Length: 378
Image 1 (cartoon, rainbow, N blue to C red):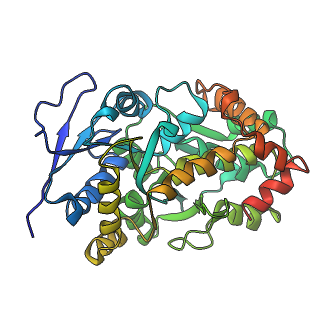
Image 2: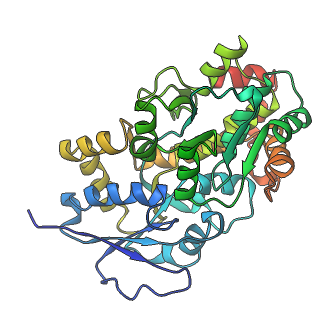
């Protein structure tokens, strides 16, 4: 078999990619080297490059960091998507921003190559009682954690304003920490809770769990694109947010803030590690075939299980279907609650985007909001 290689090139957003060969396949990471998505990208790119469909082409990772990790997707949408050898990597923060911020990228303009249907796992230090307060780092894609912590403290039956008061009283939300700084602060106990994607969790948090210093608190579940429901994670059974909430409070979570949580964590987690090309890209079929080969390669599967966990790959049109399912989850009440909480609790510059609301789901949920969300995520 011909030897393939993976190269990494750090690219400032305004710089040209002068070091890449014309035939290289470029994977655009929205983060700098060493960050969560870039760690995943390096694992996957190495295995992607082995796929026979690529016929020995080099796979190059470019790093495109920027404010709230939107610079890379914005650049892809403006110019890079028209290059047939360029694949954009999205992460969860890109999904969150797409729903509630003015961004320049649009998932409806892209075709899915493949994505790993992943999860985010939360942990806290042994002995920490969230009712007495939680300290957690802010950052791109952290919105579901802020919502989950607040509901774990407050239970059901609160207005959005009351939840905002709970957050402001009980949660210390620390801005300005980089990824490595967040982990160090958590290891030292300066942060009492943290979150990580599966690859980060295995590498950085699980050793603390094994040492008895930290406990796996909860996870956000895995979206089933056939049913639209959130399933438990086989890697962390029994720790889905809904189950942990019910164990504490004796009932399932419900209400407008839960609707906001269910909406936004689904947008983040289902496409938190995904590969995209522009619609009409002549290499789409080849790239999808490479993903199929990679996801069925026993050697690659073993590496993914060891470094990321046991998570399914979604290839091709099923990835496009995921976007359709996610759009169907956006209701007026959920989006209104989300934007209000983000602005008044998390301090984000969120905006209500009427064009994101799905009229179909509003019709389906006209019976009762709580009944719909309880059925969707039971």
